[in-house]
Image (cartoon, rainbow, N blue to C red; front, top):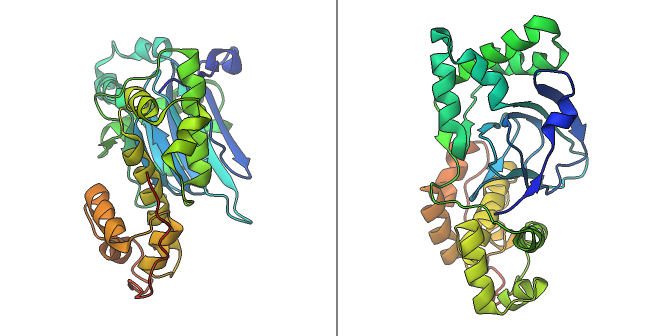
Amino acid sequence: MRASYEDIKAKKGEDSYLVYQYEVSHFPFQWHYHPEYELTLILSGSGGRMVGDCHESFYAGDLVLIGPDLPHTWVSDKKQGETASAVVIQFSEEFIATFYQHTECEKIHKLLSRSTLGLQFPIRNRGTLWKDILNLPQTKGVDRITGLLQVLNQLSGKRSKVLASSFFQPAKSRMAESRINKVCGYLQRHSSEDIRLPKVASLVNLSESAFCKFFKRTTGKTYSDYLGDIRIGHACHLLTESDNTISVIAYQSGFDSLTYFNRVFLRKKGLRPGEYRKRFSPNIQNSSGGGKVPVLQRKN
């Protein structure tokens, strides 16, 4: 998927790399890329994270390392009274490569080599790594450089998950960029609604068949699979953050059939919705409901 270019070099000025902490009412959909590596730690907020063709839910503690030129964005669930904040670290290959000649940095080199498709690091508690990242925006002088190396060195020894698929190919033209951004933004805003394929195709003035080919070519996924990722991500959030029945959550996430929801959820997450809730939010009563989900005749 083609994304807008972010000029990190201009932002960092004379500094060796860019690091900052910021807080906003919500993370907007800003599909973008840059030649720098990026390490992002989410401090507060929740929603959907897109890295290449990978779409997953994120919560506080989400820690992701993104390689050069890999498109990405975090999109908040707009909850009343909730803010979104993060620490972002962005550094160039030119800067970090100066340390590769040292044997002590071999693990860091291997870590960054594995980040081309994005890496997500599960953090179980707010320990030393979290504190070291949180302290970086306030560090000065040489401590700023050694602090970054220390963070990367810690990451090199931690378990990680690759995010984007190996066949992901960014869109090549500005027209494709404009079209796919318009479609993805619409799907993010309306994923829980009755989304019809003709409506989405009309957003970019394509026939249904041409749109489906365009979408698969630029994202590496079919339109229905991509929409399913968004809806399942939203369902995961509701399963852990609300005590609604599973049938209600299926409907709130955009599914009109509980059976289909259960099948898609199992395929994408490897767990049934009830099992997912029990594992990640054990204090919430596990119930599938029993009430019927309204049928909206969705066609994806």
